[in-house]
Length: 399
Image (cartoon, rainbow, N blue to C red):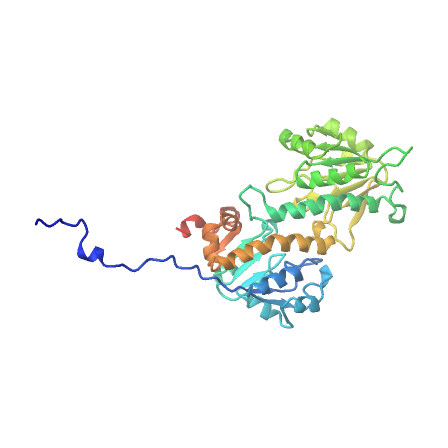
């Protein structure tokens, strides 16, 4: 009888061990939250509820004593949430991940552990070359939360803080208009038989949109100026009420400013806010009119604007009250802290689930968008060009 040859070898017929997928090793995060020391900064990057959620996932968190006071969170709330309260600032900076709202000072960078991960704002226009040299020397991996851009092309933390600034700009204007604050005594809004307040908003971005929604909601008459027809159309679709929109034409803008009770500056440029309201236009405005220049952190869009502070927020030029505080969200520290914390949380949980920051950044493009240092290597071309520093493409480092 002829034998039938098998297509398999003897070795292939022997049972082989099954190759199983190796389970990704979940990482434990060691997070430090130091107290903010920047002038009039009251926000904190994580709320007690967020700390509780992170601790429940097995992560360790060190909070410097008093870090939450500006946002009305006590040490006890953080302790009850599972955080360790430290009375030594160096302990918070010694953690492997340090969360801050404002960028660290040079003295604070010295307290960072080598190879640590820093997550904070960058505020490029306020930095000096030695800031980046100090981070490089410590081989820090640094992420600017104001540069994090999601899959929809949105900067989530910047957008949230802009929403706060937009709403706040109208509330601030309403306060300044009162007789008690030496304003013109007008009520911002509209009641029966009384003409509504006239509001001019310059800029149709997120700040302008939320300022307009707030003003329309209380019955004010709103005029919005922007040189982007696309932004103006988008804003009109988002506000379900009749509003006046126009491109920025000097004569039309000057006419609107002469009649308005409040003018909001919400234009932002790449390097600085464009100055579209001249000194001459302001001199024609009503006595007691209010200017809130939200774009002052980039120079402002009113020629007469100059930086003020939360403790001394206004000055008067030609009878027009100017409010030019660059950090409006810090005025509402608790709300702003909620907004920042809500956006930080999923990123931190994702970093842990992916087994560490490097694995998370490898697959999460939004984290790479925010990264400007990777183990001491500068990865942001804008920073490199601005300060004439060597630069490497982050995508090539993660190949």
